[in-house]
Image (cartoon, rainbow, N blue to C red):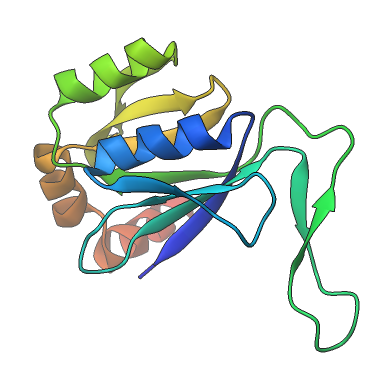
Length: 156
């Protein structure tokens, strides 16, 4: 179970507020990191998405016992090799309307024969897959250990 993720954004407040809206939760300032915000789903898992300014990266602590600390990246990449899939209680039309309001690319896409997602391109650069209830049902039915074992046999 993943309890929280962190993502980079050009406008952390706006992104946190939109993710919170998709989840039906709330967004708050995230004081441990300068300029960061956090989206809280308000669910039983404590699902959270920390949203950092894109120019801040995470670095290991400087000393052996020091925790992670923010490190400035003078020229951060616009795109990242990262995405996450999340659930929503909202309909496909509601998610598409939210993304359209924000000016973000969005489209419904199949993931093979297994399940569909709504691709939401946060700030038109960060890939987030949003799954409505019917999509979540297909995901749970089709994405499991047996499916992955089967794909490994086909790849061999």
